[in-house]
Length: 365
Ligand SMILES: NC(=O)c1ccc[n+]([C@@H]2O[C@H](COP(=O)([O-])OP(=O)(O)OC[C@H]3O[C@@H](n4cnc5c(N)ncnc54)[C@H](O)[C@@H]3O)[C@@H](O)[C@H]2O)c1
Ligand SMILES: O=C(O)[C@H]1O[C@H](OP(=O)(O)OP(=O)(O)OC[C@H]2O[C@@H](n3ccc(=O)[nH]c3=O)[C@H](O)[C@@H]2O)[C@H](O)[C@@H](O)[C@@H]1O
Image (tube, rainbow, N blue to C red; front, top):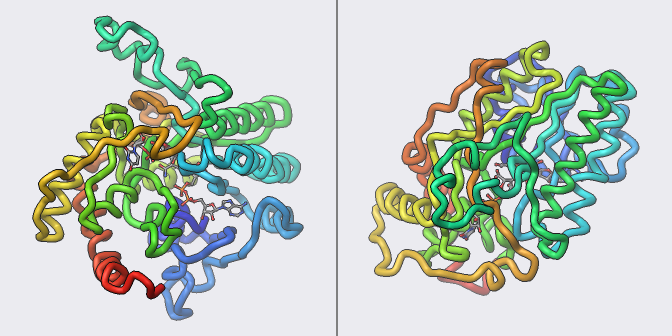
């Protein structure tokens, strides 16, 4: 609950609902503003417990105290999937097991965060490059109940994350079928916004590689070209975190309509290639910062150079919205331009000064 999505969810639950939250994480930096000072209007409704779900005897007791458990804990940055595959598999499968088990044994409802990466590659990506079928949505739109999960070979360790997430989904589904666990599985499609990941060298390790929003923000803040991996041809649909949190709140408030379902949560209208994302972020950042655009705003880099051996990529990710629409009546609202404008305004306000100082005094930390 102390990460990017957890911080936005806690904020929403505190400001717009009467619910109480027991927030568990190894860090609380992103929710500190909700915990202090004691005079906050929701003081007493949110409690932070610093614990590692991997090995902490307090976990079962805390789950027993709750009506609903939301599991967000995971390693979820692609730079880790091929370089720390064991940690990735343990984090996304093994470490989630006690949470599922305690929910099942104690009859607690579970909302588990999976990923759109469980779909892997599209069927269309295996068609010849010039096949007209590539334009047919039947070959690329990702549907919860009919699309297959298509991963690369084992040496493409990128898929360690998707595979672990798929297996935990299957386990939760089986707990529902055999033991009556009440569950909802969320498959986020590139949720982005303020507080996502970290800016290397400022609030995270200098050599760390966060997800694309933070990578590109870091480049823009430092006036470096944005790095396009393997030509930036992969396609993504990005959704504003605040739109996505509305969907999670509907799941929390409507158990009868959410239990037993797997939901895609994304914005099919915000599709771009990574290259187009870089171009749009460059324009938006110039607008919100008042800075000029570099002569060469992007640079190409191979995936091997950027991520190392074993990287692979999802080609295209368009969520089908039929199920979430029917069950919860939810639709995303914010356009890519608007969500980048508010997010990059936040990035500039939060980091520009710190970056300037770190560039001026490289040895000071
Ligand atoms: N942001 C997205 O678009 C996106 C997309 C797909 C899936 N997800 C999934 O949503 C969840 C949350 O993602 P996020 O973007 O907020 O990432 P995040 O890294 O900001 O949040 C994850 C949080 O889990 C905590 N954590 C990890 N292991 C832990 C452990 N063993 N014990 C206690 N805490 C632990 C981390 O400290 C972190 O605060 C993850 O399961 C991720 O796989 C997110
Ligand atoms: O957010 C999601 O829905 C899921 O997808 C992400 O995976 P991915 O979209 O591949 O990760 P990003 O780091 O956001 O990268 C997006 C694309 O940009 C590219 N990229 C990334 C960083 C960069 O500097 N340059 C660049 O071209 C990547 O190669 C990839 O094609 C992560 O796996 C998870 O957070 C999550 O499960």
